[in-house]
Length: 127
Image (cartoon, rainbow, N blue to C red; front, top):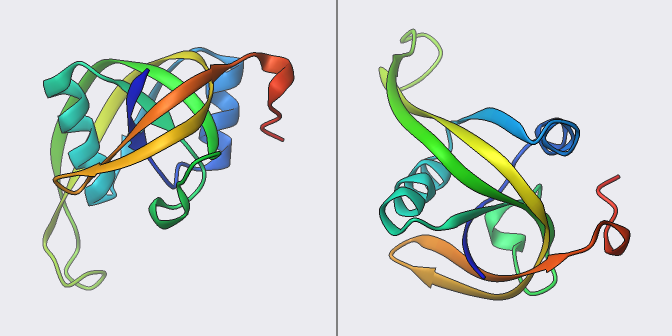
């Protein structure tokens, strides 16, 4: 199955998603925000991984999720903390589908897409 990659997801978020299959995650990375937009437009699943974008390759393990809903919010940043005044935050409600392993990675317009093989729970430990 083809999925849009969300990389650099905090370990606690992945663990919480394993315990409760529904979760709203807040994304601030521009790459992840763009990935959510692609997933909405193409009706693709998500592949969430702890690994950073540069390390995602064949064999990377993570979670497969269905995107239920997403919305972008503009948030003001105090000027003392950043060179920018606003950041875009995306809140995405997802539903866990299962565990997966990347078979092939493709870059398309700055978005990472992966062909993912769904795994059985005994094939992978998220520990």
